[in-house]
Image 1: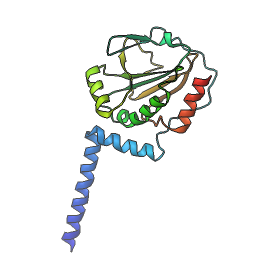
Image 2: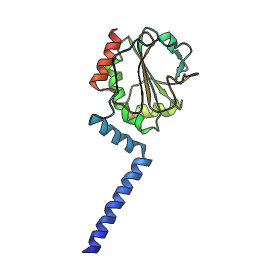
Image 3: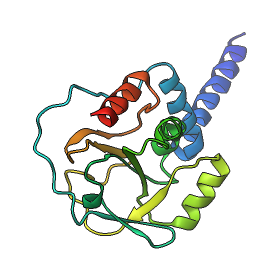
Image 4: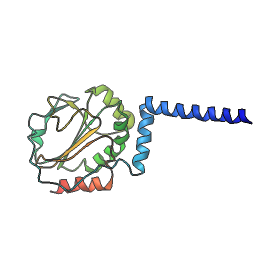
Length: 193
């Protein structure tokens, strides 16, 4: 009887260790767990009422697309800018992508809102394969020059939303559910301003 308990205990400990190792070393598995937690209501972006923050000078903050076209954030003043830094190997980035895709689909036809999904690795071939495999339609960019630390400090994923006056209205590091109703309402409010 005692041997039976020890064998059972050994099996359960082994299963636990395997699960922990999979979560540590298999990014899609970790992303799947984070997505599940998002579905349960965790990882909601913390949006607050807009404050009277000083507009940022976005001139010279540049990003390039796969065709080599350059987008300068300074040229986008008057539009809401949703800027997301991510990487294909990043589990939290993978976890938030379905919600980011839903947000993009909701606002992609809104002429007041611009989306920039910046692959921090700048590997367009790899990011295009990732987007195609996942059936995402997100416009991918790479960093095209200096990025101020107030916008991107290197943590992935990082999302920054600028209002039409170039004020940072939202900045979040880590995975978040951007298809959350509160965030959708926040984006609509920015678009309508």
